[in-house]
Length: 494
Image 1 (spheres, rainbow, N blue to C red):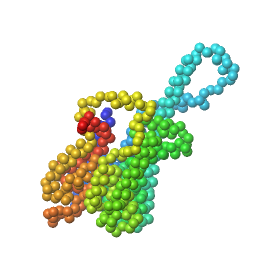
Image 2 (cartoon, rainbow, N blue to C red):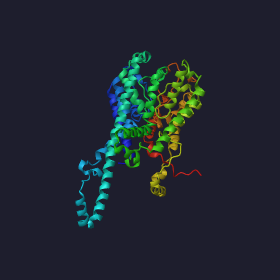
Image 3 (cartoon, rainbow, N blue to C red):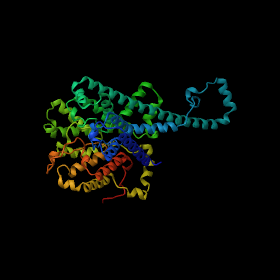
Image 4 (tube, rainbow, N blue to C red):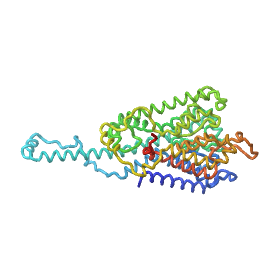
């Protein structure tokens, strides 16, 4: 099956399963039962790791939070890549130990035997050299397959260590820090569920948090924020660099030849997240470069803003760092984005649009030995379907236009809440599977409504059903965007 269709079917089935499970389980309070479309929207948002919300999180019961945890876990990029690896592993042939021929396993012969063989069997040297070549090829194939199997367990260990260790650290922090423990007790949330839910959401780069206010309620708990920041990076932008580093460490400790093979033959393995040493280093430098640039701009514009009120110097610094790190695909927010300056919001839009493995440092797309294949790829003719495919920016522009059409009446009546910038943030956030939103505020209404009540969910929660359905398509499109990275190449602007 086509990989694109396989991924699309996977996310569709996962979303439908999540919708069914969320529908049959009861919410925390019957007075605030979510609508059918909102339940499906939440399921899609969790399965695609987008964290776009149309209902408040505290509406969901503990059992529903567990269901959402499973959806986020199953929809995470690392988990899906691990499934692909184990599927490939299951298709590999099994070898017996005696089939692996190594120099040390060759039988020793005496000098007399060697001389006798050299006299009697000299005419068979060509046949023997041919057999040796076949044996070397077989050994390379066996080593490659063993390396793939070894990589499966490395990724599994990485996945388990980060989740189990992170959950234990968050749970330990909540039980030791009275202020964090008091927040959960006040909201009726179980510490164990909160810890596992938050770590899974953070590592999967979803951004859902069981509290209505997301991480705003923990903005003074700098220790908790510092525990979550590595999870954001380990599960997304720095995953290739950390995976390669883990394999290098295992090579130094275990001396296994599979580790050396993985580091040198990453292309032959076919695992998209296993990159070369140079690109992994460039990727890490780029990630930290983006963080530093954002942090400097954010602090210079927001240090004394309303969003930073009641925070000391250390808390402001950690909150700013947490916010800018989450602008790349996670979307957990410790500050109210509705009162952030527009310049920062535009910066976040750019960061949300960039793919996770973006690197602006020079790397060669083709190895020296692959120059012939690269030239052949350049000469390949595009099919009619490939020529008609638009670029990702084109699709996003179309989605924004469609939503502006469906919400045109609200944009006229309530322009401070429904404006092009807020809609663009919502669409790019859904496309980047981030979850940032400026929300909806009754105070920004030009014609105040008496019945209006502020709710802790995204702006999409106030959209029409048509707008919500379009954003569901955007979330699906964003989750499979890696299959359209070369779209629009047939269109020439000059």
